[in-house]
Amino acid sequence: MTQFEAPAIVPADPEANASDLLAIRAKETPDLAIFSVPDGAGWRDISAKDFETAVIALAKGFVAAGIQPGEKVGFIAQTTYEWTLVDFALFYAGAVMVPVYETSSPAQIQWIMEDSGAIALIVESPEHFARVDEVRGDLPLVREVWQLHLGAIDALTAKGAEIEDAEIERRRNLAVGSDIATLIYTSGSTGRPKGCVLTHSNFVELSRNAAESLKHVVYTPGASTLLFITLAHVFARFMSMLYIHAGVRVGHQPDTKQLLASLGSFKPSLLLAVPRVFEKVYNSAEQKAEAGGKGKIFRAAAATAIEHSALQERGEKVPLGLKLKFALFDKLVYSKLRQAMGGNVVYAVSGSAPLGDRLGHFFRSLGVVILEGYGLTETTAPATVNREDGFKIGTVGPVLPGVGIRLADDGEIEVRGICVFKEYWNNPEATAAAFHDGWFRTGDLGSFDSEGFLTITGRKKEIIVTAGGKNVAPAVLEDPIRANPIVGQVVVVGDQKPFIAALVTLDTEMLPTWLANNGLPADMSLADAAKNPAVHAEVQRAIDHANKSVSRAESIRKFTILPVEWTEASGHLTPKMSIKRNVILADFADQIAEIYEAPVHTTTTPLG
Image (cartoon, rainbow, N blue to C red):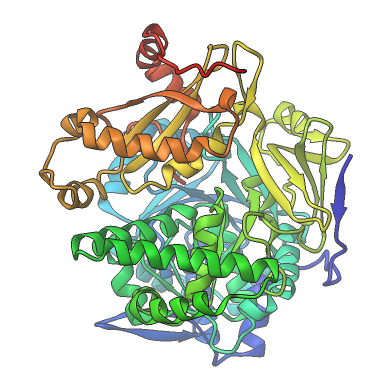
């Protein structure tokens, strides 16, 4: 059994809780800007002390409204400054937040509120309130629904004016490390969401140790980031706490359509994103170059960037000719992409899905080192991450300090340490099934290299076994196909079937540009595009590329382009845009059956 474990760098403090991250920051650097909020065409800074003052004032409002220590409060909102304000105000009031994805349906909201036992709910918009209102009658425990768009923060702040500072300080110090800090529900990709009990120590110890591991990223003077992925997910939630601990200035942009403009004005040094964001940046740049008649130049620049980075990673000498090409493309292409991201980005942290070597090398040559990490809700996000002073593109890095990872006999990744959750809420059976000798069973498959760098190879429950007995990990094929500009999502099928096939959907954002660049009507309907020979040929190219990484028996032999989108609203994607494989297999069973009804034409090459 392969095992790697790293001792914690920072001594544990069992009495510390998550509110200490802010209290210490405000005390040590009261004038340091830790947030910036939109202000006209620019940004207005908020210091650590001013943020804590606002947190305390809102916490007083929650106390005046009757919220008791340990009570749970639901929260539905986009990624904004107010999200973290509410988060820490609840910590200071001694309460427990239960975040809900802002895209959740009424039924999902009802389940999370019921299961958690939440007694109040905060919503950001009229749309959120309307969804809550549909199920309010079925939530007898919910005493209050506060609406941010109607001025709830100001009203609560005014309501708490008579509460003494001493009461907030008393409540803030009630929780110890082993107590529940938050209840985060899994995205539900494999069934009904389960509530993960994350403790104060999970956040405090992981923040302190991760900051030391990434000190050149987060402790650099003037470090800043623009946060745009949802704070309801553990990845952004943990990083927002890490940023406060480390003193990183944070801005927010919940509307990804405004992301490029915000990057240009905010000019962050650090980004937090999922691979799909980096794919979009690359694909958009490629299609824009194609539209301007410079597609050939862009592709040559990309190939040069990838080759240059790969040589550097292997420690090989870069030939003079490649150096000259790289310098030319740096002026023509790379510099423009750096400016599109604000011009100051040096590091990015990526998680939730594999990035792939191609994008890792490409962005590295732009001057942006993407540090991939690995984790789940149950591990408070990161269990491993690449470091700025030692990273390997294509891996998710070594274990963080205070964390251990071992591989079971079948390759399943098991985790223990400061990041691992306490239990599933109200679900002792699921909790017992999730642990093996004190190690959390992730359900993911992986492998280590000799230096302890982890590579994710698939998901245990998703392994396909063909009729011929071949084991196939879908992600190995799906990830490179999804990188194609016109591919939205892809699901590989073939369990107990004679060959591997795939269901493909098209990316409706990228499709019009691609169609126009290829001499086709940009307004072509999704149904027509799914049947178009040029579109079919482009998807075939993506599949041919993916097939190069696997054996013949594992390769995709047939595929179908579906004339629909898979979205969270359709029930086929989770809030973090992961596919709900079981739902898709059930909903598109007829299309899968059609794939295997028609004969497959193959070319047989005689031997000898």
